[in-house]
Image (cartoon, rainbow, N blue to C red; front, side, top):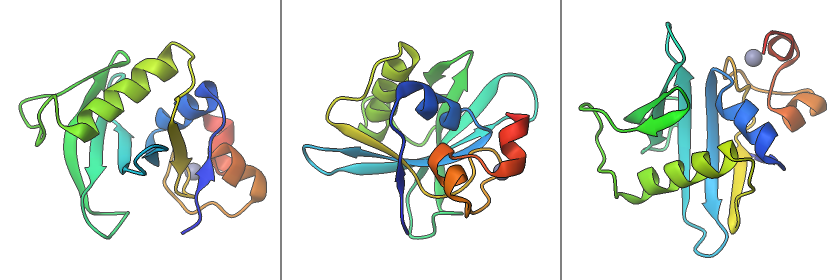
Length: 139
Ligand SMILES: [Zn+2]
């Protein structure tokens, strides 16, 4: 699957908080990568963070933690510890982006699906922004 690189902190944040966003974070040094899915809760400004743990990038996700008021943390249902690499990487990424800093030695990709509804993106402008034509107006 082709992936698209998001260039600046603001477009990455817009994507992450799009509603149902799937993206991959890659370390330039080690090429370690993690794919996350961040989905908005039905109520409130809460987002659930899940980690891809299997071959199906639409369904094989495991719950990691929650973002509440833009703070990421683990909960009782978390399957990972606070010092496990996918948790450390996610926290690092979010903290940096929220303070409008780039991700040194890391690359941020969306997987070609809309950040709001997770439908496949086909229009070139949509692939670039990470939002489909209809969802772009609603974000
Ligand atoms: Zn959409």
